[in-house]
Amino acid sequence: MRWTAKLERLLLAFGGLLLFVYALALIHGFVLSRVAVETFKSQQLLAQELQRGAESPAKAPDFALWSAKRIQGYQESLTSQFQPAMALLRIPKIHLEVPVLEGTDDLTLNRAVGHIGGTAEPGEAGNIGIAGHRDGFFRVLKDVTTGDTVELVTQKKTVTYLIDQITIVDPSDVSVLAPRTRPSVTLVTCYPFYFVGSAPQRYIVQASLVSQDTKSQNTSDDAKF
Image (cartoon, rainbow, N blue to C red; front, side, top):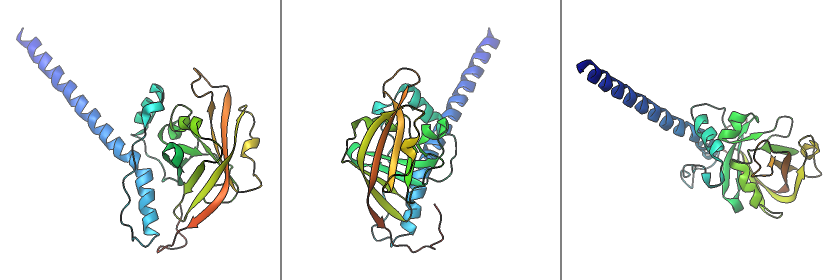
């Protein structure tokens, strides 16, 4: 019948419109997902003499080791907005570069890694706690060893740490976040990495301060992260 053909064409057009809107949302979210890193890097360059030109855009996450659930969580997080990154976490050996956002809720850890409240903040002395999902950004921690370097890049400086301890603890053991004898960064994720369900333990990577590279600034010393 003629009315069914019209209805079919209308439904197809509506479906196409929905797909178009969904595609636009994904593209918009993809751009927003770069804001934490790109804005952060832009702010860094404003604090330098701009002699080396613009930095390259942030790379998209490597999903090779991620679980399907975490990939979906990351993609869904692209439509959300977050506060500017506190720092960039880099571990050269495992090719990890990820923004550090404030908080450890599931949405934050789907998008990036999160600063653990109550611990020192990036750029400060003390023990800086950073959490990440074992089936997302922090799954690559399974491949680090003692002696590997960890970098925290803030607007004012790059701080380099050396991994000196890797342990597995119970979730209730928060002593790993206590101040250590030297300024440190402590990376926390669930363990085992490929455990099905809620992982029963925590994988702890701790690194101690090696050096700080303070950046020259053209901006006010009152600039905040």
